[in-house]
Image (cartoon, rainbow, N blue to C red; front, top):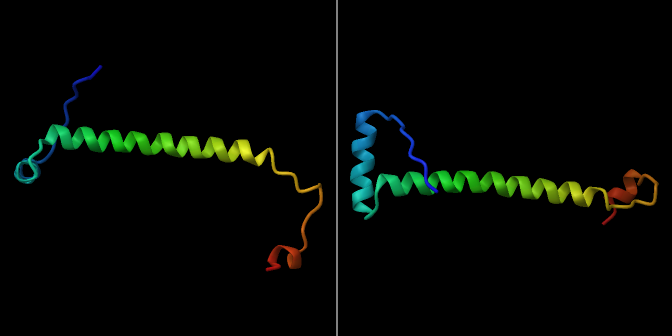
Amino acid sequence: MTKEITISFEEDIIETALKRARAEDTTLDDLIRGWLSDYAQRQRQVDAAMATIEALSGNIDLGGRKFTREEMNER
């Protein structure tokens, strides 16, 4: 389902963007739709990554001891 929205830009920005969109054989609607979709997708990716990190952090077992500085820097 699509939902129509109204946004406002300065006239010169719209004119420049329209010229560029025409040169790229696309429309402002398609460009804005693509940008908004990418923007929303990035947040979903961040949320998924954070959920994975949280899930993994509970599964790491260090055996109840702390590592020394030397052990942590050992190569």
